[in-house]
Image (cartoon, rainbow, N blue to C red; front, side):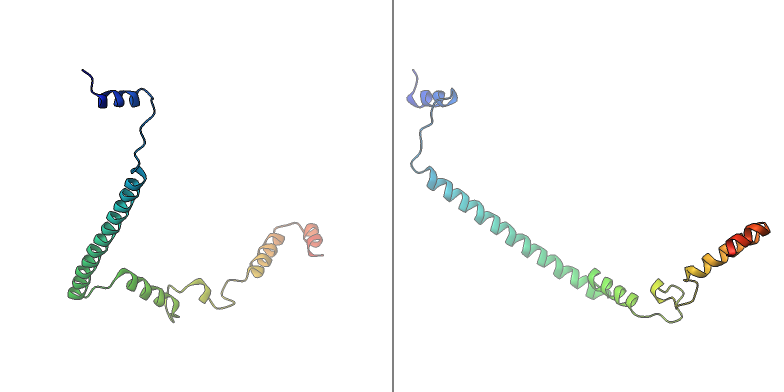
Length: 128
């Protein structure tokens, strides 16, 4: 005793053609819309939860006098940009001209040092 439904399913499993549901397109659109709606609800829920968390974080910051990471970083950056007079850890750009940053003087002194150790005739050749 085979039922007609069972034979149709067997035909599908064996590679037969499926019956096309006339409302399949409509059902698929409804399913896609339901998924979109669920995703929007999920995003809204997470946004609410994050807002609550931020509120609690801010209460903790206020209670203990803490600052946000962004505020700390902005203050540190501003402090670095301000000129620090008398500071031992100044940026390299702040080194005044003539304080050891001239490479020409170093090269000349090295050349002079090398020439001192050469024999006399070679020194004459290089000095010309």
